[in-house]
Amino acid sequence: MTINNMFYLPSNSRLIGLTIIRRFCDYRSSPMQIYGNMMKVPLLASKTVAGEILRHKHQVTYKPYVKPYYRDHDSKNMTLKRPMSPHLTIYAPTVPAMTSITQRITGTITTVYALLLAGGTLFLSNGIESYVSAIQSLDLSRPSIFVIKFILGAPFAYHYFCGIRYCAWNAGKWLAMKDVYATAYKSVVLAAIVALFFAIL
Image (tube, rainbow, N blue to C red; front, side, top):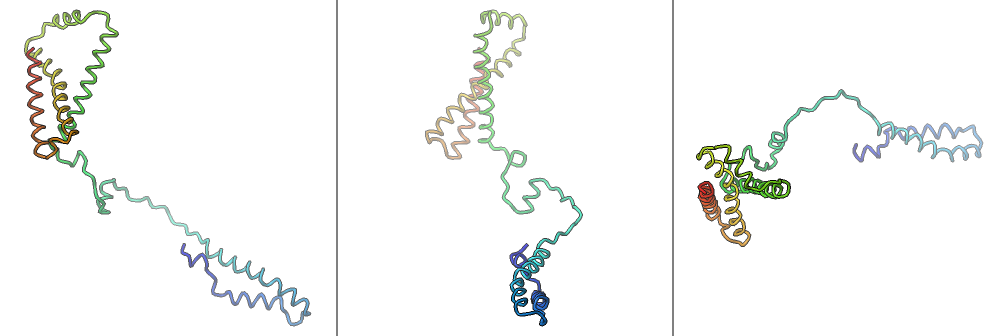
């Protein structure tokens, strides 16, 4: 509702006023009656005009409910031409992004390693020699042992070299894009070499 409608006065307000005056100011009345009736005119006129204003102000229109058409978040914002942030389903993977994600994954794995070793020393009653003997009793082939040791050692090696890379970034080194890509490839190569060394042991 606009401001004009809030202060709306009906077009027949003059006619309402004249009708009120004629009603209370009959020529056959005495002067005192006319004076007393005239004192009632403002109150009655204000009530009449206020009733007209409220009648026009609070008009309610009933319409049937129409369910709005559903659109997902992306289509609605693209229609409104809002800027869209890239996400994993439409964003092309890059070497820095993938190495960063992999570093977080390997950090989680090495944390699990540390928790298992700490829990083993606290809660397992037998010494480590008994568990080594239990693994040897499985009679695994040498290729199987090599693959298992490589898989177990690769997260630690990768996270170690990526951690050095991250520390260099904090020192303000290797922040150019060519250095970012170069250190990413070097970290992967060095991690593979160290993981192979762990597997050979």
